[in-house]
Length: 110
Length: 123
Image (cartoon, rainbow over the protein chains, first blue to last red):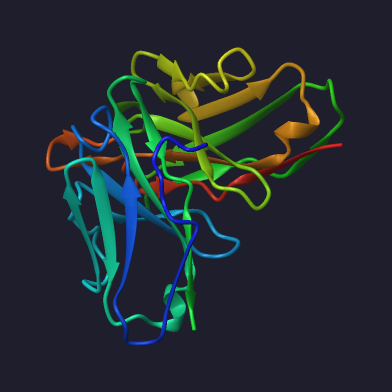
């Protein structure tokens, strides 16, 4: 089991807004920022959001992150077919002194 | 261009040893943490451990402690992940990642530079 909990799958139609959740505890998300990665099939993960709600240069503003308590969320607005990918949340864990991942959410664009 | 270049795919037998590499370029390699991440077939991502090249501070995930060794050669800006005795369950894609530094703050769980991955098959 992964330290952070994500739903295994999510789906939406083009143009919709989809939200992916990530649940942790006080040692990780509760006390630190949440980060999100996108992994397209056959490629390395790509950082999508860092420090909970910051986007690296080049990431469209359709992607946005937020956090409340020990849970984080990634919202994808105006869903596009190229958004079909696996999405992973990550956070620093103070008790493990290491970063931890969620189990990943496979997003399908219907 | 900032990048991490990983060594090529490997096919090994159970019990054999292996060392894969990750060479950084385009940035000050020793100033940023490097992480190793495992992705088993059809599964998710797992942090295996991290290393700070400047002082070789290393931290292993409990799941991998004792089974792998992470090291670095600062003279050639290269990090390594090695096994002394491979198992079939080590079959996976292994990624290295680095940087994770924004506005003067370190964010090890938000690494923005990734290698292309090294596929290891143990059979």
